Image 1 (cartoon, rainbow, N blue to C red):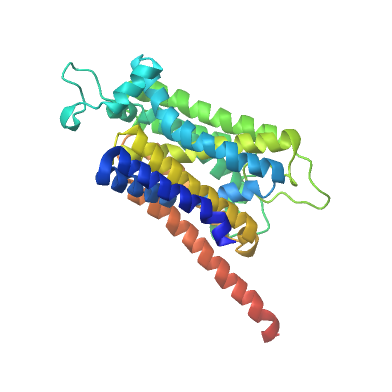
Image 2 (cartoon, helix red, strand yellow):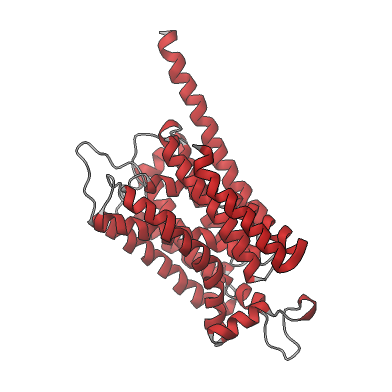
Length: 362
């Protein structure tokens, strides 16, 4: 099963590395490989959250997410999205934006000799509003999870009081709004305060709208209980319910991609190498990990894994918001998520062993 699930990802990786070598030689091959590793390390928590939603979808919508969804992830977020930012920010047309990306200024300068900004500079300057949108979307997802009462608790000493506080209606919106105002007024550059506020509000609205649509078409099976944040649990969602879960997953994937896309420019500003490394290699492996978690039933076997992923999302949301005013090394971002998920995984194994030994002790 492992070979069947990861086989395509390995094949795509080999082809991508060959293309990178033909495109830019050994250096391009090395950079594409590094970006692929970066994407997987940053997005493991994304794969866990994707799996929690994907397992509620019908086989048809699972296939849509794993086919059309991967095209959106590879070409939409890793190639077109940066070009779109340059297009909007610079006023250039799509062709001119691509030409700007493929022809950087000499000596890796931030500006061309005529004083016009480089592709990388434009993307970097747009980071505050990108982080504002993605950070608030992920923060809403995290808060919605921790403020909801659930039977299974991982960090009970913390999750229990948070769940009690969550009985206050719309508390997640209040907390997120306060944090957005503090972020915009304290961390954002003076000329970016309003753009960060607008981007953050749009991130909140996007989450509320997509999550609300998921709840609108929620048709639970008999005996089904609500146990997770994000969109309502949908019993093998089909039709409109499946579509809105698919839409939710794409927005979620985009929010997770922001830090990886921005972080990639610390390694290279070449859009082709970024698309090969982050998209074809990284995004494909994230999809394969998602499928593996669903097929193996890992989330039900390791009960705290979903909790760890949501706490990793919360950490990523705060890191994105903090990065509006201060640079955060991408390695730190990746390690925080891996550490939280690893701790949840270890707690799940320990709990399973305790339950296995309990009948014997009795």
